[in-house]
Length: 131
Image (cartoon, rainbow, N blue to C red):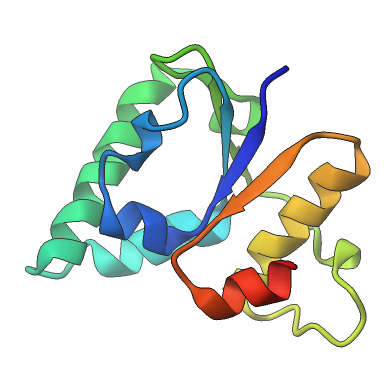
């Protein structure tokens, strides 16, 4: 059974090839991640280059198919982009306006369906909150 890896933006900015690292498993991005990539793409530094590269890679996977329904990845898994808000799944007290928290909310929503979910981030505080 495929695992569902929810990626934080910083993973994609750190390694533009990270979308290919999950083999036959599913990758889930939220629209927040796409918006953050959009903000970084203007930079002339490594993060800007990686953001542009990741955006081009995501676009190439689409092949005319909606990302919200999942598109095939070369390794056999699927890439999903969640545009729906799942903030109702956040524990009370978590700020729904924070992008990291909205990403975590998507993870919580998937867990509620019984899916196996792994949150991948380079942000220590996000990992602590996920726990």
